[in-house]
Image 1 (spheres, each protein chain N blue to C red):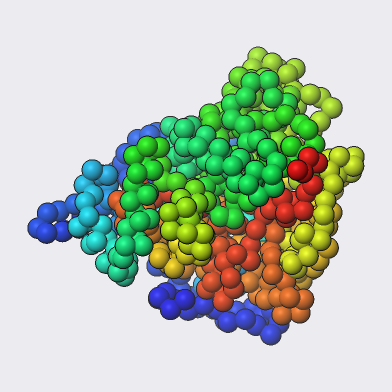
Image 2: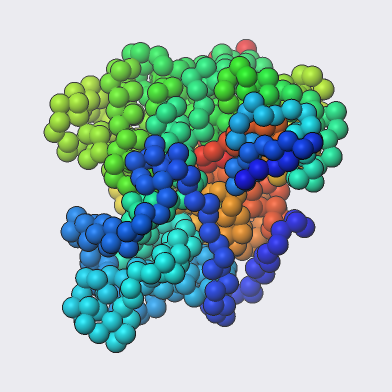
Length: 510
Length: 110
């Protein structure tokens, strides 16, 4: 790509810690949310006058509410194990992108206002006042974290950097200093039902088009049903699956799986989004607003099972937080939650990931494949961070790594792994997760993809890989955009169910 | 932010998308294309007009697949694919074409 104004990192012969380039990413700042979006979010329209006081009050509130945050503020010993684990640090060399240093932007403020030595002798303990400069630094660098938690895997204390980032963003939200991309999307979801702003009639039109396409290609009437009461399964998937390439190919695949297994299913126009950007901002309230739509849709449609499509952070929210947010899953006690728990079929995991769903059917022998239909592909798998490091599939440790791979190997013959320190729990972020998948952060995104591109290049050179499968809408969109910067074809990325779609026997071929 | 076309000012957002859909006309479209370094041909207009018609009906830009299918039907199967659209709109048919057509930016994981 010739038009960019920044330099793409060069591949390394072997991984080394980059030379420090202080301030090299200090200019990176996403657009600020406008007053209208902020009003809809319930946040101040712009930075409030007494922002310092309000920010510290909010900080104190979060420390009281989340014991984990206080532990993370106190327990770091600056051992440095995390420093070279961050894709943004590896690719930019900016020392403030070392996870420890990024956290210290917040920790230094914590010391000043919440610890005795910091209150008495700030200079001695590296404590800082929350000045406008510090706030600007927060805004820049906490929007250079994709909340992927790779650094946390290597932290001897298990400090969850993503949670620190979320807290910082939440504090900035409450003083009116918010990022446009995420907040605009949450507002859109609350108004229309999905991140794209795709209204019901457009969704219906798109799904009808898919039915025609699949009929034309396979001769089979595969249905993509919408708002069908009494269906067995409610599928909740990222709205990008209805809109973007290659996402939509996996949606086609989900429909074929339901068809081949003879299981009735439906999408919901009210809950037409699996993604939950409330997570990225650390805003419990917004996360709950987004999640509750799924419960409402499930109750309204009377479904017995809830299945989540290929979306990384959605699966984290569904797997880890839906139970307390909505009562979907065990644990919640409010009347709606109890009603939903009584309605859902206890023989299945609720919710299930689409890969678990498909893998179960494969194991039961209910799906058949022509694996050679994928023989033109040499496939590798990119683990998406939120699935890999924040959730599970199946009922055993590591299921989230194995099950998507099992599905791929059941539908295709050529499969290769990338380097072991870049997959499974050590997977590298695509560079666009955690709320940074926006055009105004393109430099960060291109650079952040670097370690993954490096690992990909190795298997492209050594094994001729021409398909990188992934189960996250953000990963798919991010790679489609950044692959060309590294001289790859943008069509090198695709979904796992795109592979399923290619090989599955629909059972009633004409 | 604002752009000025033929002496008239039109409000845009930070990324250059028109704030008000009703502000769009062909001259504005040409100006926005110029800012994207795109020289509009009949092939571009085919896409732009389809986007605007679809938007009028559904209040959203069409899915990329819907767009490629429509263009394929109209201009022949060899043009009914996203590669062709990327040739016309190198930054991506969804976002760049929407911007020039005066439609809001598609958001989310796209």
